Amino acid sequence: MGRLLYELGRIDEKTRVANERGSSKAGKSSFSWAWELDGTVEERERGITMDIALQSLSTPQRQVTILDAPGHKDFIPNMISGAAQADCALLVVDAITGEFEAGFDRGGQTREHLLLVRSLGVSQVIVAVNKLDQVNWDPSRFEEICGLLRAFLVQSGFPSSKTSFVPVSAMLGVNLVNCTDADALVLSKWYKGPTLVDLLDKLEPPTREIASPLRLPISNVFKGQSSGTGVTGRICGGVVQVGERLRVLPGDESAIVRLIDVEEQSVSWAAAGTNATLYLTSIDPNHLNIGSVLCPPSDIVPLATVFTARIIVFDIQLPITTGASIELFHHSRDVPATISKLIATLDRVSGVVTKKNPRVLTKGISAEVEISLRAGTPSSPALSARPIPLEPFSVNKDMGRILVRRGGETISAGKPISLVAVMILNTLPGIVLDVIS
Image (cartoon, rainbow, N blue to C red; front, top):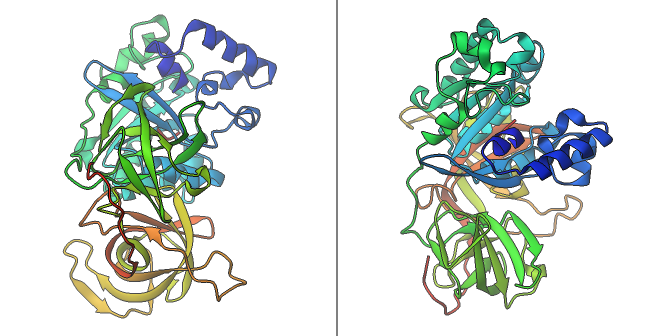
């Protein structure tokens, strides 16, 4: 992404030279372009993306917000947090023989990343086949990779009409913005299609839940220089404006919106689908946590400890049984939970019940299950589970998606159907307003 931002004028020459010198001095010269988004000392020392980085770029018809997500399996929770805020996906795969296969073979991160983003509601995907210059711009290698991925994308639920493939060389800058320089000579002999920017320009923004009550899951919290405490996140519903009082859930606290920043510009309001930074006052920063949700005091998000969900079981080796311990992911929050009941297996197309009270769930099955949150300390069973802000998929699609992991593996994804155990809270008076490599 660093090279693309440079080609589009989002990185100046001074910054490019500084990143090049710094990465070379650190013995990571091949990572110079990544340094623009990998900004922490640890990320630069290790040469891997560990957290979500936010940037933006403009195409002739689109304003695109980039969420650079980690690809390493150790940082899947951070990747999930980023994917939960995305409308579309840009998957970058390595064309070098053996490298692509390592990610795509069973258990590889390419497969898991695609399953994750699709499960979180992303239906548009661009696949950039990178480093084709390292295989001499071999068209057969490009077609081989596209063939394997195309079949998997369809199998995973991506509509074929919303998937695109583009050959690139990020290091050389070939086919990112144009395909006319000397380095692109071999590629231009057999590829006459769009560039990466052309494909980004054709992405379709989804329908936004603007008329819904405000829902903003917090993905990051930081101390503002002079404007209170800053929180970032993607607005999942409604509209927020400066001066509004918001409730912070879970908890009994409220805060006032002092400033709103969108793409480093101060604005007076922001609507659903926007990745925004809010600076809040009248609240102790200790009450603002990653995973909390901001909402209107008069229309708060429900807090649930037990709920039913319709899930799809992925390609797993160990079946899911009643009482299975899992890790539940919802936006930037992950909590321990249990599959407390297997209610029924369902037909994947029609949703009709095929079997009630099944003993186990195996790969590829669609099912309705009951999920119960657990206390964070297994050694203290007397402690009650803390509820999480959650809404059924039928009420708010962005707030109604979950992922289930076990033993470092994503085993299923689903949509909450109904909330069984819900905490009832008193409302406060207030204003009723509303890229994977």
